[in-house]
View 1: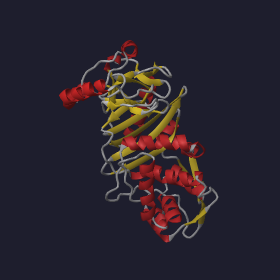
View 2 (view 1 turned 45 degrees about the vertical axis):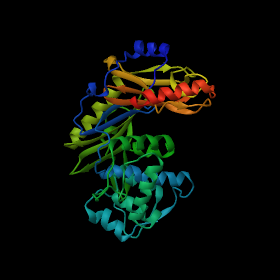
View 3 (view 1 turned 120 degrees about the vertical axis):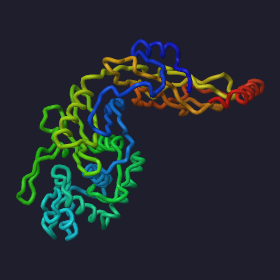
View 4 (view 1 turned 60 degrees about the horizontal axis):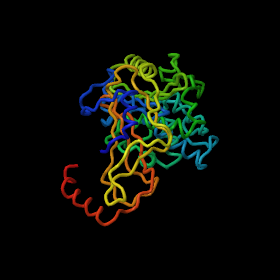
Length: 388
């Protein structure tokens, strides 16, 4: 770790009341009945709530978010269109349709359905038959499609999630985390705005059967416009939601609640708290030097660091003394260094939650130093380097 530039650090102290205490010294700013929880601000990437966010849980119908990401990506890349039609196989009909007793859009056996209607069925009605029809149409089988889901998850930065089917129905070895579900939802909103709107549809009718959207947040007048609910006996009731208010957008994922009513109320409370309990502050201006990293063998002893653009964060309106800011990098950095070289990150904690991580870059060119300076750096590294 390195020091933050003094003037900037002083500003941080006055604006954020940062306390330099161990990371484990604080509890959550908000108590939730969810077993696992993760909430993030869409604009700044500030993590507002994090409770056991990396715990592996069965996804249930929340897996359908990944199913739709694969579909949206295929449409955006030109491999599919909304007017493409897919055949309802006997497997899709029996496993996810009317005979299955699970969530269904009541697709008729051996009928052909436009992709856009299948998307609406999956998003609004949580249609398992719609998922399987899409999976078989795109990859030949659910197993192959699930492999595509996992591969695609890795490409968009989801490192832990593993999918075994397109529906989220119980399957051995199928897991997600609330952190990755929230980030997946934000990814869908950013990358596919033309399709994200489907998540706000209040209802959808197929085969003359009208079904309402299963997302309880849509009826609460809190600015919600997505995304999905799920349930498994093992992990309880879960939800991935998003809401926008006064130009702000939050994404939240919760799991492990005891009933649909608790799920709806808890999601509403968490989103409302996230909107009310924080205010946005710019802590470093565009181009401002944030700190310095130690150099090894350089013409000077350190290299100044800055971010690509201004650094803003949402901070608690109360409890501002529960923030910590540190520059973290692997060092010392070896000279020469060119301006723009990635060096480390500015990490800010809210309580015990790593709330924001901003990449930092060298702000200047620093060449290699003379032989005597390199020799002194080498001696210093031998004497104290092991302490890092």
